[in-house]
Image (cartoon, rainbow, N blue to C red; front, side, top):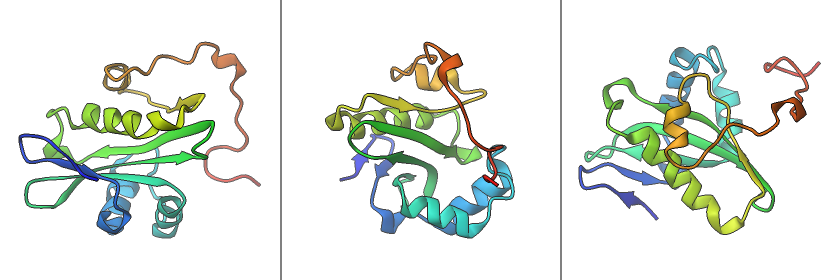
Length: 146
């Protein structure tokens, strides 16, 4: 069910509305964490995730986020991207709030995300620094596990 703002933007989770070619372009060419990501990887990740798109008043997609979740205990918010012409309008914060609200009924123990430069965006909707980052571990270099 879409959520609309007075300025004409709307958020939807309908996977048929996600423009994966556009999302691939954004992520693989402009998102430092996903530079060079293949189209196949973007599509596979989208199929295994809950996808959020923001659309302008003409219906063009202007932002994207996806959530990896078991819908019982855990979720990972990732690949959050707002197209440059639409930045500075609060869309990132609105998108993070929509994700938070979408996940609320599941009563998840944790919703994690990783950000280098958008802490303020996520703090506005309730995200806080991980209380003990020394407990977190990672397998692989972030590209593949070999």
